[in-house]
Amino acid sequence: MFWGIIDRFVGKYAVIELADGSGMLDVPRAVLPKGVRASDCLDIEGDVFIVNSSLTVKRRAENLELQKQLFQ
Image (cartoon, rainbow, N blue to C red; front, side, top):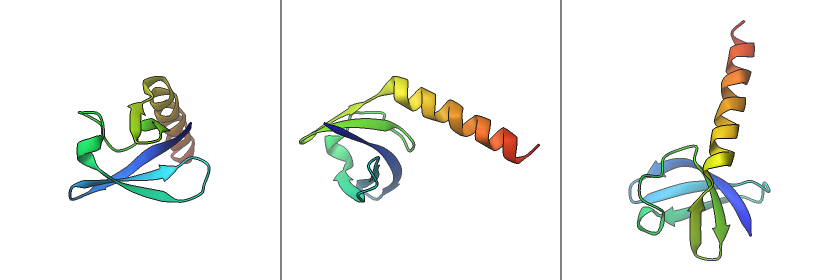
């Protein structure tokens, strides 16, 4: 199993950045869980994509903290 982050949506596709740095995946939105949005973290097992809510919340909090530090 590996994971990635939804970078953006382009038409009917989601662009997912793989966390191991190996590249990007273009995945049809139709195969992703309903309600996913950019910056959501996904566990990826073959053709199955599962939102990892706890990792998403953790990474968003880390990003907010970095933004605060930049603008101080």
